[in-house]
Image 1 (tube, helix red, strand yellow):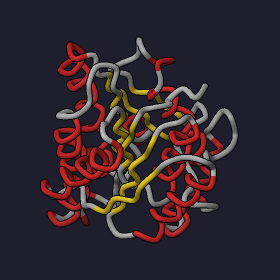
Image 2 (spheres, rainbow, N blue to C red):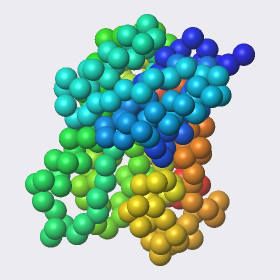
Image 3 (cartoon, helix red, strand yellow):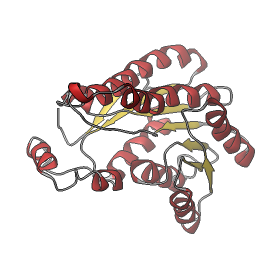
Length: 248
């Protein structure tokens, strides 16, 4: 029997990459999934089509997580479509790298508004619906362990995600809602391709430091998300799980 049969999930930033892989993996285990997108409706609809072709249920839901009304609208649309909410995956994120001399107020707010404020706003809306046995999964980053140069703002946002995960695990634990984070290492996605990271000297240097000797794929992260969403992780909360092939 599918481990998430009868459950409903929201995955933010799910039109491509890690979010799309997580949405498909949750659906494969029986969850109905609200596939959120900020700008790529076509991408989200392609994910929905793939889920439906495999016999699952999904709906594409537009919304900018950093805007309060839209963040709430994402959750409301999922509940309207499927009648409940059990799982939230806070995957939406943006990144940019620059030396400290080039950090700007605009860059700071662009990343913190989506990566931190957006996570808080969607979670705030979701906890009005998630009940006992629910799961919140925050997608952080391995940068909080690696602290690479030129990532002060981005690493700062993901450090905040680590801290928020621990706080919410304690805050929501009495309601029997589990909160965990997955911190991926270097993962090949459409985003890393377009940013020029894939197959770059930067990626090769990281892979050379990775005990398992390869970059990650979105499915590597999706499998960890499925574990955290199911009862298999029923005694797991407040954890920061690094999924990076051993890269530290």
